[in-house]
Every structure is written in structure tokens, then in C-alpha cells.
Image (cartoon, one colour):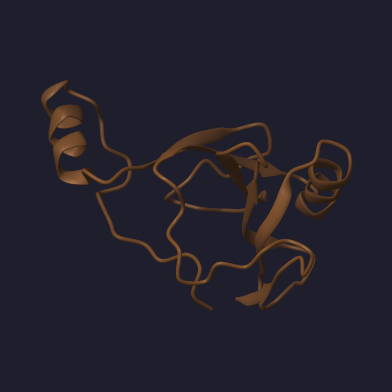
Length: 124
């Protein structure tokens, strides 16, 4: 993966995403989506990682909304972990009590599509 970032946006490599809910989206042209979301709507690009085999493919991007929260997005691709087609999405929940929330979800009978993991998406 190749890391790039918008140099005009503040960089916080040691800071975890804020506790909250982050919608995740796939785009046919993720770079164009990032351009639109940042220049037209006002999101701030904080992380953009491209595929090592194709710099046109965004493997992971985070865009922050200036008033709080944000979205994660990437290019349409084959993936067993996340919805992979454009127009599909999922919700990524960041919490300071993951074990409690996970247990509540399991008790409710939800089908888990990705096991609970600790991820540091800000490191190259």
C-alpha cells in the first residue's frame, strides 16, 4: 500500500479516530469522489492509501467532516471483509468499549461478518 495525504489537512498519526460511527463506501472512481467530497462539500482528507499495483485504486481513505465524524471509502474491488461493489456500504463503529458492544450484538443474534479486531489504519 502507498500512503498519501492531503498536506493542507492536519495530520494526527498517533491519534485514533474519534469514538463514533463511520459509514464506509465503495466508489467506481474513488479519487473523483474524494475530490468532490473535499472541494465541493468541505470534507477534509486525512488518509488516502493507494494500491501498490495501481495508484488509481484507493485501498483506504478517511475523510473528516469539520464539525465531527467522517466517512471511510475506497475503490470498488474484490473483498471478503467489506462490501466491494460501488453503491454498497457498511458501517464501521469506533468505540471505547468494544467488548461490551460486541457481546450485546452477539446476544441480539446478529450475524457477524467480521470478527472484532484492533486496527491501526494510520500507520504506513
